[in-house]
Amino acid sequence: MITGSGLRTQQPFQLPAYVTSIPDGSEKGTFLAVDLGGTNCRICSVTLHGDGTFDVTQDKCAVPFELRVNENYKPLFAFIATKLAAFLASSAKLGHTTQAAASANTEPYRLGFTFSFACNQTSVAHGTLIHWDKGWDIPDAVGKDPCALLQEAIDDISLPVRVCVLANDSVGTLLTRSYTSGSSARTLAGVIFGTGTNAAYVEQRCNITRISEDANQARGRSADDVMVMNTEWGGLDDDMKVLPKTPYDDKLDTDSTDTGGQMLEKRVSGLYLGELLRLVILDLSGKGTLSLLLDTESPVHVREGVDSSFLSALAQYDDTTDLQQTRGLIAETLAARDVSLEDAQIIRRSAAAIVRRAARLAGTALAAVIIQSDRLPTKEAHARASESSTVVEELSVREGKSIRDLLFNFCNALSLFTRKVLRAVGISRWHSDPASTPAKHGVAPDRQDSNASPDSEMVDIGVDGSLIEFYPGFEDAMREALREVVEIGPEGERRIRIGLAKDGSGVGAALMAQAVGIDNE
Image (cartoon, rainbow, N blue to C red; front, side, top):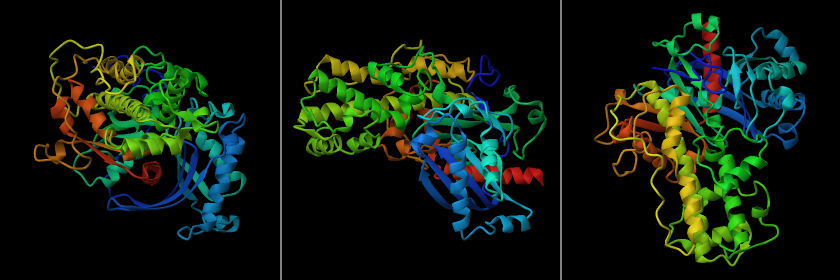
């Protein structure tokens, strides 16, 4: 039973993507894509070979801060159109580039626009921006159609390009994974763990009533009557009823450009994890808990001065035998002096707790999507739901109760959050306590062991983003959380296959552009 869900109500999540054709690897053609998100813009030419493989030619550039935070949308979209023009002029694979050549060619290039911000889509090619996040703030664009704004800028410089798709990076990741997997298992979801976080999944259309009548009457080429949903899960529980909270979370939110919004994203995505650690280090240093000395030019003194890649670098070292290397890394990265072994252990364990919390929250949110899909058999509950998760192990260094409390706060409250997420996507059958079975390492991505289910019974998940690709143990912590959800459990977790879908945002937009062309033929 699906009740109280974004599938049926006009909440700013569970948004229809109007994608009804799920790739099978046979798609062909060359298409353009613009990928806008994080702090970068990518211009791509994607060639689909029809055998689950593709080639990508791309240019990538940073979007200047003054374009990402601006009263007017025109400078941003003019910037994108100018970069697109330069790409067309330099690409050997593309034919006409000048206005004269364009006039001689009756077919403009089809372009998919991956716009990684929340939009209320009304069709595969149109939608309106709901809000900015990830540090962007252009009020003039809110409520407008991103595809129309880009097309306007393209037409202003007479490029032979038609923007025919409004894509989302998580939708693109799902489609790319489906195109490339070469598996009989149908891809269920695409998930982003990068600068931001989001997920898209395949939903039965009969469960969705918030789509237009024209779209309701349309039918895709999929064997099932399905539509891809963009969950926009980064904004789940913005009212903070169940998400874990620390003073560092509060400070990060207060200083952000979207105070009070994207509360899950601010605990999971790479944009914010480095800032959380910076706030921890700044606080503990000020209290004297850390004995290290921070130079005046240390990035710890600068808002967003600590990149999340620092947390991945810390995780490369062992917590006991490699502390000398950890001390050197901290001293170099943070411009710190007199870094003690205890300092190194506290900072490394704080970073690990921050990422572990992120991964477990991500696993909990993914569990809700998997349960909603009915791809796994339902399990009966065995106990009443617990209001907290496992307490973090006692630290062996001299850090005091305040540090133990900090690490506990970063890792608890997942059972409550699980139930909140399940309610948000409309699941009314959450029953129980995390499984009591001790956690084991999850099945490695794209690999089945001797106890795994047949390929057709696997639940396939495509992922992309630097956090899950480069942080050691991120997937293991996600899988640990999945096992603790009784509706999934250890048996269900073994049936979940997680694999990277590289270039998902660009290739996915091209796949959508290809599908639009087929539907119009």
